[in-house]
Length: 238
Image (tube, rainbow, N blue to C red; front, top):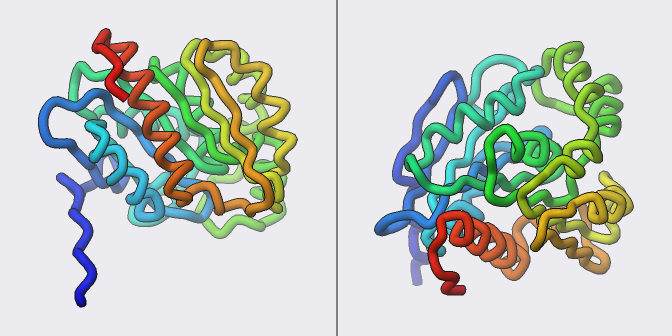
């Protein structure tokens, strides 16, 4: 018996040097989500989340950060600017949200304010000092403008960004994460003061275990959908 072929994205292309896939629901979208991968990853690793968004009535755009996948140029201090640029591909006039994992979680939190996001989801977000240390040690395999990216990381503290958020933040972290200690999210959670913010810590697991867990993926989609409906002024249906 042949397995069903997954539905493809509505559009695949390059925007301002950033390779992307765009996922659109049937009918008018409730909101739109920019999904941001982690260090040395790529947009395709988040297509399961994008498909789940589409099923929930959300548009989603996944993209390769600079230095990754099919995007041009080394990764540098434009990480937030790139999120705002790729968000231009989402349908106009709908609430927007961000969702990122690891380094992508850091970028999502930093970009949520400038984007005017209705919600932010961060999976095991890596703090800037940890990312900068990995960058300087040569642990990462992606192409980077190390001085520019390190300067950005050192100037944009994750705790300050969380404390400044006016949108609800959903933090998810595996207790046994071997790359980003769970204490990072436990320390960030009390700083997220927007109503509806929450933290889920799963027992055991590892750095990538939450990212594709169907139940937790569904939690993230519903969190974003609820925030977008509230922002849009529509009745909550889920």
